[in-house]
Image (cartoon, rainbow, N blue to C red; front, side):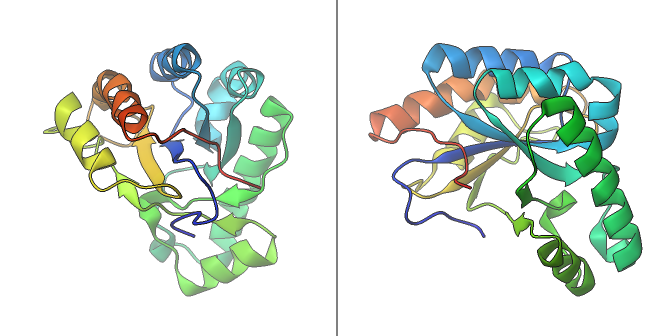
Length: 198
């Protein structure tokens, strides 16, 4: 799934966290704007900071499954993919107290066997229709906001990152700087934010 065409709002999604600096600031910005989001978490990061996963849910947002270790599914057998995903699922559900419904693979890439395994587990595969390319070292707050909102419309899923574990150092800070611009632009177009629908 790349879009939710039946939804009036725009789904903001954040990958790769939780992060000790990026996640709390993103949560604060979302709270101040009255915005909601979905966080696709990495199990190894949840194991390091389980309380942050709980804080995301307590703030009214959703947590979903990204991975345990951030690896390209094309380099994993179906068994390796499932072992990684199940370890992450267990860590996320234990820390957040919320069952997993959605899965987004690292790099947005599934192998055929990984996609089939994901669907057999009952996880909805979620990609995106808009992205800020905020993981790049050359990204700026303005470029992130421009890419994330260029031609955005109701039903779009926007990909951002609240962590820099698997991307350019400090990229979370540029995303944090871009987020208020993104929210303002969405508001100017009459678009509300929404967590992904279950």
